Length: 159
Image (cartoon, rainbow, N blue to C red; front, top):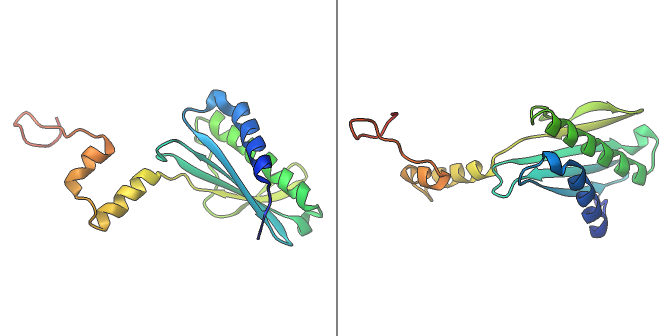
């Protein structure tokens, strides 16, 4: 697979999409990547916040031969779909989610494939550290910002 974008093109597109949806974004950023081969173009829009407790890679694939379009058209189509979908996601209160596996979507006169998975990379990393013994379970409250609650008896538990 070859890169589908020039670095300057990526920055321009990221800025345009961010400007369009900034009013619905919190501390999130957008990162775009893309690749292509002889048959398809694949574009990923990564929507994440600063601590990666929200990490949502949204992927779109356009099969050029099947759709009878050129690589630049497939790339534009994938970007348009991801821009549209990001709007759906944000405007729905972040409830509109892509399927985990590739699913076909009609977008205008074209069929495209998309998938995505909302993750909390911060918790994933803490879980890995716990399982690998790099941190102790007692350290989790401090690392996640949770305060230990004590019951009226002074013992840990629900208050």
